[in-house]
Length: 98
Image 1 (cartoon, rainbow, N blue to C red):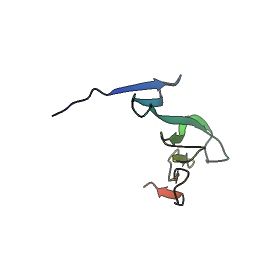
Image 2 (cartoon, one colour):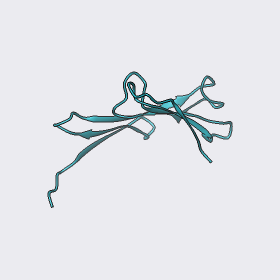
Image 3 (cartoon, rainbow, N blue to C red):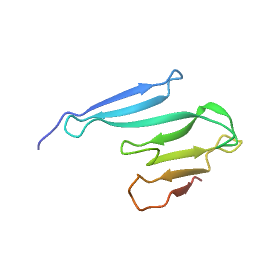
Image 4 (cartoon, one colour):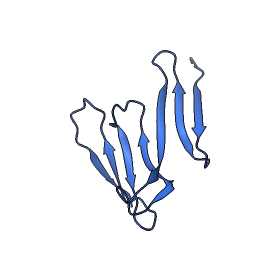
């Protein structure tokens, strides 16, 4: 069995929440996933710097391939919007959370 060492680097924001996850790869280039915090009444019923606003995946380009979260007044995220990567012939998906 051939084993490769993998390096993963995490960064955290001032509140101790994950900010980025970087999968280090010299062959393909580093793959970075980002977590963006902070909601407003534009996208949510709650205004908070503590709530997750979006998760942006490594192959995202120009805001595509991400999940955007909205929250109700109880702080729950009943719906999120998943945006496909640019160039893919797919519609955004609404994900219902129970």
